[in-house]
Structure formats: C-alpha cells, structure tokens
Length: 118
Ligand SMILES: C[C@H](O)[C@H](O)[C@H]1CNC2=NC(N)=NC(=O)C2=N1
Image (tube, rainbow, N blue to C red):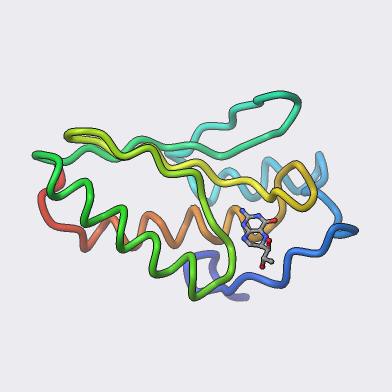
C-alpha cells in the first residue's frame, strides 16, 4: 500500500466524495502533527512550520508552490517572519479529500529538507 507521502493527487472533481467519518481517524493518524480546523463549515488540515527568519519561510513557501503546481492541488499559505501556516482542503468539494492528506504528508517531506527550520 502506498504511504501518503509517496502518493499523488487525483483530479479534483466537484462530485468527488469527502473523506468519510470512518476514513478521517485513519488518515489523520498518518499525519499526526496536523490539526483539523473548521472554517465556514469547511473542514481543513492545518500546521505551522517555524523558521529562523523570513527568507527561510519564503523559500519553504516557494517550495510548496512547486509541489502544488506539480500536483494540481494547492494549499492556503500564510507566510510571516519566522513561520508559515499551511492549510489544506479541497475547494471543489468544500471539505477534505484524500488529496489533502496526501499533500499534508508531502508538506512534511518538503519541510524535512527545508533550510532554516526552527
Ligand atoms: C482547475 C484547477 O485544476 C482546479 O481548480 C484545482 C486547482 N487546485 C486546487 N486545490 C485545492 N486545494 N482544491 C481544489 O479543488 C483545487 N482545484
């Protein structure tokens, strides 16, 4: 079975199913440091990554842009001095899809090799 951080996103179709109540605890266990937030009724995955300064935060942001473009699935990215807040959800279904868990795991992989982590 492919682990989340080696998987790839499928196309975001408007009729795709959201992650079920049964799948959610199984998937969230695989990305242990991510939080579930609900904003305007939309369930999202969120995690804050800390860096030594803005330059390193911006470099991580740009690296996230690269993998997002490659996968055709994009996060919310709040880039501040010393930290980046990454938020994943599927706009097309206004909630969480397996793609979001894949990209959260891929985000952790990018962060592992990012310079200037705190
Ligand atoms: C046309 C384009 O591929 C779609 O709008 C993609 C772009 N990136 C996306 N990213 C996210 N997070 N959710 C989407 O539904 C989504 N849709």
